[in-house]
Amino acid sequence: MTPQNSIFTVWGAALKQWDVLKDLSPSEQEDIRSFVVFWSGYSALYITSRDEVCGIGNNGVNLNLLGLTGTHYRINKAEQPVEIKCLSKKGLVAISMGVYLGAALDREGWLYWWGCVCENYGEIRTPHLASDFPRYTLVSCGAMFIAALSSDGWVYVWGRFWNTEKFFKEDPLLTTCYVTYLSCGVGHLAMVTNDGQVFTWGDGRLGQRGYSSYRYPEHDDIVRRAEIDASCSVVKSGGHSTLFLSTTGQVWACGANNGSNGFLGVGSPEEVVRTPQRVALPEPIMEVVAGWSGTLLTSYAALTENGSVYVWGKTDVPQLVTSVGTSLVGTFLGLSTPRDIMIQVRRPSLVPPTSSSSSSTPTSDSDRQDAPKRGKFGNLKYLDLIKNHFNII
Image (cartoon, rainbow, N blue to C red):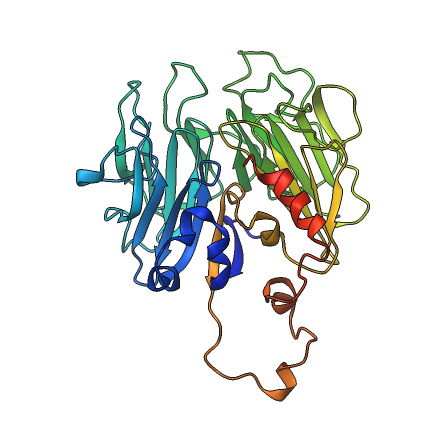
């Protein structure tokens, strides 16, 4: 996993699976190159082939979550696509959406944020620079704060914890090692270092910080190491949980473990799991994702090395939903995209396939994962199961 926001790919025809995008004209759909869907599937931001950033769907009078400006500022809903000019032509490479704010990162390392990003409650800002320095490589949003990773391995935070007064303004967080990846939950942050350690910061009342001695609120603004023996490559934060992917393909989890917040899949009857435990997955894992929204119920998905996909959260045991060699993006068709993931749109090649490439056997891992194929999801019960798991994101 490289130290950048994860990117998935879909074919252009799949855009019709998302309600917020399906009514766009054929030319508008054809022009989309990457996008994120959020707010339980009712909002989307997308980037066109001309590097225009557009928003459509729910915006919120008291949020302006699409980052709209001018006459569209703080409208409740954008029925048609609206260009966000202050984000267009910037070369954005990442967009992350929280509950009350959003953030974006461009290819030069400039960081932007918008929404409820002011020290005074109730003030709403349009997209603007969060930093005077173009040094960031990754960004993730919590409910009311953002965290960004700089090119030299430092982590900085902006905003506030859920319903607290302290406001952070590009404050650095101290860790003992170079940070390579990070992910935000509602009120906490998890960070992976170059030597495989995981450090956490923020709220830990439901076990999401990953260590047994957490004290509220004394520890909220203190970085501490999670109590996990495995060396990790990636972390993914649920609303009130943390998922750890080890370098050997094992998945661990801690945090809230119940029907309201989502089950961790660790086989524990405890509603709060304070230290990381192994998730009951039968195969080595190469990718994990987590999704949560205003409901704060988190769902999880994992992709195995042989292409099998498991989902859990609404169930306490990971369930195999497909074993046909698809990618994780198939589990989110028509639903909100998982946290901190930009979905890129693949267009059919204009060059006719050669006889050697017209075989039904995929010629590459990318073809095997992303190419549209008959019966991609196998029995329809698998698709129903997937949607049942992720319709809360």
